[in-house]
Structures are given as C-alpha cells and as structure tokens.
Image (tube, rainbow, N blue to C red; front, top):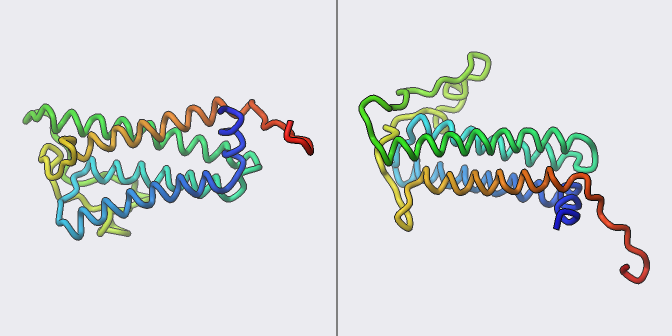
Length: 176
C-alpha cells in the first residue's frame, strides 16, 4: 500500500483528485450560503480557507509531481488539514457546549496583505453566529462533518508522507 501511495504522489491524477474534492466542498459551502441562505460564521470562513489550502496543495502537487515541488505541496496539505481539523473541532465545541464566554468574532481577521473579505466578499464575509446550528445531516452538524473530512485529509497526508521512502517496484516483462 505504501508503494502505491508513493506512486500516486508522483502522478498528477491523485493531486488533481484532491484539488477537485476540496473544490467540490467549496462549491457545497457556497450552495449552502447563496442558495439555501445559510449564514456562514467566522469559523466557517476560516474552515473554507483551510479547504482552499488543501485545494492549493493539490494544484501545486499537480504542477510537477515528480519533482521536489510535491514536498512543498505535502507541507501545504498537512498544514491545511491540521488547521482545518483544529478549527472544525473548536467550532464543534462551540456548538455542542454554547457559552456566553466562548464566542467567535463578528468578522474574519485576515492579514492586511491578504484582505480576502474585501477582495471576494461573496465567499469570505461572515454573517452568522458560530453557536447557531443551521444544518444537520444524519444527526451531525456541519462542523462535525468537517472534523471527519479534515481528519480524512490528514490521515491520507500522513500515509503519503510515510510512503515517500518506499520506491515503486520496477516491473520486468513478465510482471515480477
């Protein structure tokens, strides 16, 4: 399995699949916001940023998967998955244990050199409350689903990193 994961990390297909899954999740978030009229909170916006990081890692990895650039993509991938998992967990705790002392900000705080909320307000402006439960599926709230999603991204990232020293086997004419 580790040899297979190493082989996948050296091809564009797996990286593009990762970018595509993150893009699909971003589209779902925008569907919830603009079609279902759910109001994203600040934590939702930060979780979106983590998904954009994973999508960016997939794009970086797909650019030149056989070069050391894929290691840069793995660093972006693991950082985004860890941060996404931390944010989704914190958001889940806010929803499961609401407290007047544990609240989220009213607006996302982006660095001055990257004001995403100014550049693309349709995607990055928060208007909801983190403690409000707006949507659930199979009795799990949206941040609980994101905990599972980011955990899956993280587990696969760790396995791919562990698989890097395992070179794919060279096959001869008879498949040995």
